[in-house]
Length: 461
Image (cartoon, rainbow, N blue to C red; front, side):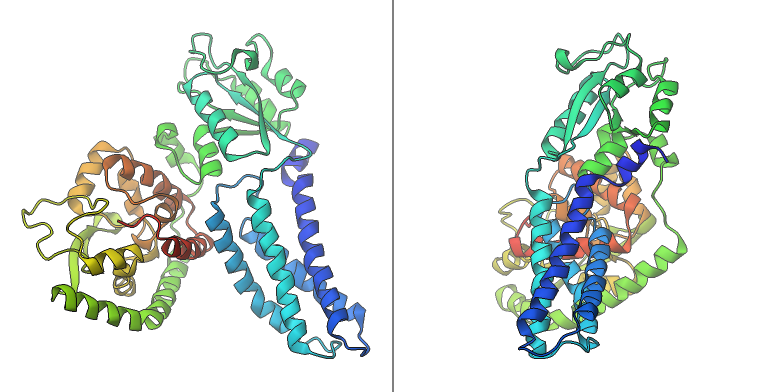
C-alpha cells in the first residue's frame, strides 16, 4: 500500500477526531466514578476497562453513522438526527456496562447519568465539529480535469460545500474547449498530467469534461495517477459523494449500468420488509390516539369522508391506491384535471392545513406499508398523470420505480415540497441517490431526519 493510499484511508485530522471522542468519553466516565464514589474503594483498572469498551463502542457507532467522513453532504438537522440515533443506540450498551460494573460504589444512578452526560457531550461536540468552518492542518488538494462549464460547476460546489479542500488547478481537456475558469489556475497542456499532480501535491482528480471521445482524456496518465494513490472521480461520483444526489446534468446511462450500487438482493429485500412491518406497527400504536383526534376534527369541519384514496404509481410502475387523511375540500378537483398542490392552496381546509404542516395526513399510509404496497422509506409515490408527463420530460425518471415508494424519503428531507416539473427533476436527483445507495442505515437516518423536518414544519404545502 502506497503512502498516498494510506493518506486517503487514515487522514491525520480524522485520527485526531477519533482520539478526541475516545478521550472525551473515557475521561468523562473516570471523572464520574471519582465524583460519586463517596470515599469508598474503587478498582480504577476495571473502571478504565469498561470506560474504554464503551468509548470504543461509541466510536464504532459514530463511524457507522458517518461522523468521521471527511466530506459529507449532511445538513445540521441530519447530523442532529444521527446524534440522537447514536445516543439511543449507546444507551443499552452503557446500561449493560454499568449494570455489571462491580467496582462502583455510592450513587449508582448519578454515575449512570454522568456517563450519559459524557456521551451527550461528545455527540454534541461531534455535531458542531461536523459543521464548523474547518481549517485543516493538511488541506485536501484537488485538481479538476477540464476547464469548461462542467469544471466551473465542480469548482463552485467544492468551494461552497467543503472548506477542507482546495482546488489547486485546472488541466484543460482539449485545446478547443471553451475556458470558463480563472486563467491563472490553468495548467499548460504541454505539462504531463502525472508531473503536474506530483508538483502540486494533488490528493484527488475530478474529471469534469462534457465530451470524452476523440482522445480528450489521457487515460494512461489518469491510470498512472490512480495507481500512485491519487483518487480519480468522474462528475457523477463527485456530486454523489459531495451532495448526496446524482446530478442529472452529469449523469450518463453507462455510469448507471456499470457503476456500483443499485443492489436489490434478497437479503436487503427481506431486511427492509421486516423493518417496514416493525416500524409501521410501532408508529400505528404510538399515533393511534392522534389519528382518532384527526379523524374527529376532519369530520367536524367538513364531514365525511375522513380518508381519501388516490391511485399512485408504485414498484415497477404498478398502480395502487394510497390512503391519506383528507386535507382538501370534497370538490378539490371537480373539473377532473389533476393539479400540483401549491403554497396557500385554496382547496386545503383549515384542519387540512394543520395536518399537512405536521405531516399527520400521511399517517394512514402506514397501512399501505403493512399491506406491502409501500415502504417506510423510498421515493414518494406520484400520480400516474404526472408520471407520464415527467417520464417524457425528465431523463431516467422511471429509475425511481425500481424500489417501493415510501412514506418519507431522501428527497423529502433534502428538498422542499415539489410543485412543478423543475422541482420533480431536482427531487429525482435525490431519489436516484437513494435507489443507488439505500440501506438499513440510510433508512434509519432518513426517519430520524424526518422528525426534524416535521418539527421544523419544512416543506409542507
